[in-house]
Length: 400
Image 1: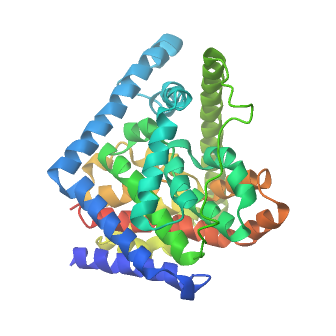
Image 2: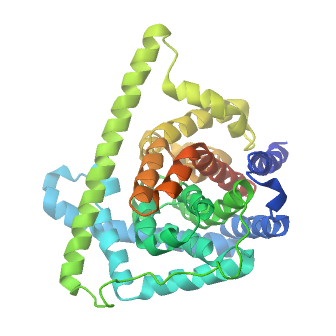
């Protein structure tokens, strides 16, 4: 019965994309069908096949190994504050960023990561029939994150129309950053974290193709050269590495500031709401809104209610807040609940990300484009939620 509800949920989520489409006549259903089938194959392979599970486990073990290596630097810096038996949020989730971010930047510096992104993007465009840059952008987001990929795509953003830039904004809600996956895996089931990443990429293309369908001509389907503007001259390696390490440190401070502020603000709002009625809270309000969609993921009512509360918390605050809440208990969850919760929260879709995206476009796009994106901010947020729901539904089909 619950599998049937999960299938129904997947259909309903796709219909929501259709219902909120800006131009239903131009939805390319053949391309949508190809991407849906591709995600079904990916979800089955990564969660339902022995080879896929082994591959995901190997990747998760690799990130765990990276985190364990990073802990040596943390132990040196913090000494007794680093307690392996009782790790705090900063030591367990954030300190590894100081190794992983520079590692990915080094791979970029020597050209390996751009090569991987380029060819995966081309392959994705060929298979799905999506425009070259949108496919390239989707893959870049997986490695670089939303604001970072927008920053390096400035030339393309300025040459595209406001409708295509809206597509980029919608897709930016659905990414994660590869360099932060080690932190996620320390707190949540690694196999579902890593499964969510490629599934999110395809669903970002599905959601944007349905909600904001655009016909891109062959003349427009180009990728501007992205790279150094300094005649191709590279910065000296150790100067580059120093900047990367400082950037990782700033990222940690940003995450700490956001988590502390959002948790405190949510607690303050809950206390204000509780003054009117004790059971009332921000989590419960948004959770009530998300409950029907949670139930459509194929869960008993009591599990669906619990998941809906975590969904609401993630959308209002961020994924780290939810991970911190459930990290000690999620291993005891039923497998299906564990899968759909982990996949749903593996994205940057939340209120705070909206501000980051608008801020990034303000510095890159013409004012008309930025105003257009700002006027469609509801579409941007809805697309992020829809991608997370679709990803959870696809993976949930094969995790029981």
